[in-house]
Amino acid sequence: MKHSNLIPRMSHQQLKKPQADLEISNYGDFSEKTIDRLEPVVPTGIGSAAIDGDPITIGEALEAAAIAAGNKAVDQNDAAAIRAAEIRASGEKSVRSGGVGETAQAAATFNSHVKRNQDKTKLSDILTDASEKLSVDKAVTKEDADAVYAAEVQFTRRGEAEEGVAKPGGVSASMATAANLNQQN
Image (cartoon, rainbow, N blue to C red; front, side, top):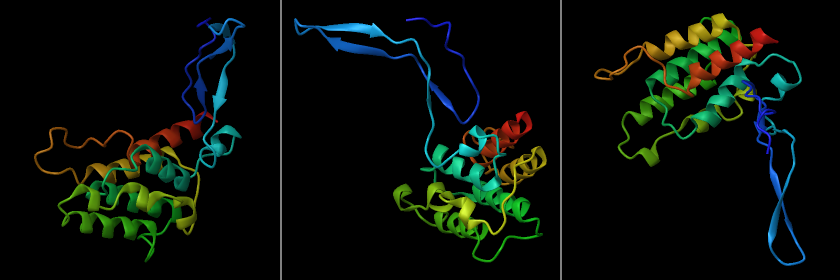
């Protein structure tokens, strides 16, 4: 198998390593037939904008966070980041009543009173189909990502070792990735 064709890429399109197909011989044993190709693996429904050249929107970045960290319980950091993202998307001064930002805040408040993690509202509960839940959506810019990051780190809990650092794979990380991809296109 050749490895010279493996090229790491940073995009919504993930590359699958060249695969070895197994063939069954007449004697019942397996022999390896190497296929030297790269097959793109594209999740359906998400990230297609980056692949076809359209900029990634704030709603799509929020949906990516739902996939990357969807099983994480919503906390105040997440709620602040989601509220900031909704405000950046809409251009308004506050979140819309019943919008994704207000829903995230209600979930964070609810979760702060719940003991069992399985009973808490998760990011995926809030951010799945975020593009449809936003009243207005727009392409993510570096300024949007910076604002969401600032909002996320302002609620760092007391006693956490890394004060002022956003969680990998979270809302601000997804926004930063989207902004970087949009700048490249």
